[in-house]
Image (cartoon, rainbow, N blue to C red; front, side, top):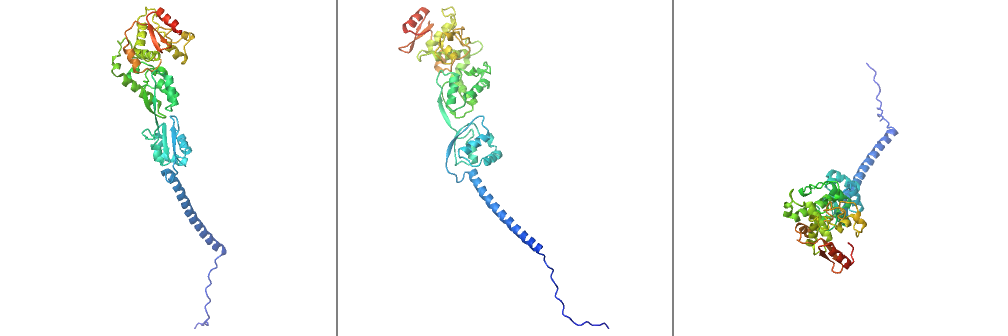
Length: 371
C-alpha cells in the first residue's frame, strides 16, 4: 500500500505581476486615443467653421452689401480680374475664386467690358455678369460729328472709355472686314478706313472689343449708302473711294448751307483741266489734314504728300475725314455751276463763289483773307 500523505490546505495560486511599464503604456494609448478623438472633433469643428466661411463667400451669404464698377480690359488676365474683385470687396478669398474659375472655365466666359457688380452676387453670378450677354454691362451713347478724322474719332472713343486708340488703329489696319466695297483698300495702314466710319450716334459697351466698334460703324455706312452702292463698277467714272474722298473734302469745306455748290467747284476743277485752275483742287482742308489740324500756311503748300492738293493735281490719296450723308449726297449729285473759286465772308460766315481768278482776288482783298 502506498503511503498516504496527510491533508494539507492548498496554497492559493499567485497572479502574475504586471510591470509598471506596461501600465504606463496602456495609459499612454488611452490618452493618445483621447487626444486623437479630440483632434478629429476639433478639426471637424474648424473645417466646418472654415467651410461655412468659404461657403458664405462662394454663395454670397451674410455679406455686407457693396457695389462696384469693374473694368475688364482686352488683354487682362484672369488673375487680374480676381485681384479687381478682391480690391473692390466683392470677394474675400482669391484662392477660392481661382479654384472656382478652374472648375467652371470662368476665364473663357468673362468678356472685356465695364460691369456694375455687387456682393449679392455669388461666384457664378459674378462670372455670368461679366459675360457678353450681361445686363450689368455698362453702355454709353456717343455722337460722332460729321467731318471728324479717324484720329479724332479714335481719340473720342478712348476718352469715353469704349476702347483705346491704339487698339482701334490695330484693328483698322489689320483686320480684314468682309465688305466687298473695302476689297480694294490694302491692309497695313489704319487710315484705310478713313471716310467709311459713318458719323452718327452709337451705343457702345464700355471696354468694347475694337473690332466690333469699327464693324458697327462700317455696317452703318453700308446701311446709309443703301442702293447707292450698286452704281459703282469697273465702268464708273468715279469709284466709291473717289466719291467718299470728294465728300470728305466737301464736309470739311462747307459752311453748312452750300454742300452742293462746294461739290460743283471740286468737279469743275477735276474735269476742266484747261481752266485757270489746271486740275489743281487747292483745298485748304487737305493741308489741315497734313499739318495736324492747324491753320494752313504757305509752307504747308510745299509738303510733299499725295494728300497735298496744292502740289499734286486731281484727288488726294484718300478721304480726309468721315463725311455725313449730306456731303456724300452732294458728291453723288453736285450742283451744276460754273464756279471755280470761293471765299468765306467773315461777317456772314458763308461762302461767296466766283468763276474767275480775278473775281476771286477781288473778294480776297475785300475781306482781307488769305488764299
